[in-house]
Image 1 (cartoon, rainbow, N blue to C red):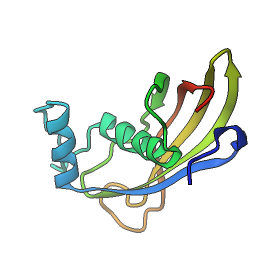
Image 2 (tube, helix red, strand yellow):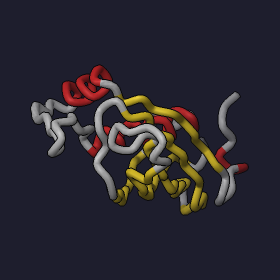
Image 3 (cartoon, helix red, strand yellow):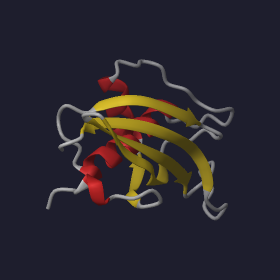
Length: 143
């Protein structure tokens, strides 16, 4: 059933996904963006490129909202307070902050939050915020 965007209200959780960033998924991201750089932390653990986290979490929102063609990703502001080692399990949630119409466009502002279920490769350390952000999506008002 298609999403009725006019029924979405600020505060609604519009996406919730779990991502496992294993070697294969990180390699596929790096190949897709032609990034040959591999970064390791001081302990020799391979780290996930921060923009891979952003792309995969926002991709979940776009899929969950069934965003149509003709959509414009107008802006995004992202903060990455912690590095993420490859092999991490991330919980990605998105809540609608604004849903308004201006002229022929619907502006949807989405707040993103990503937490790492295993910090630094050590189980039991609790959830740690690894990305927060806000993204503005513009789509035709009649969509």
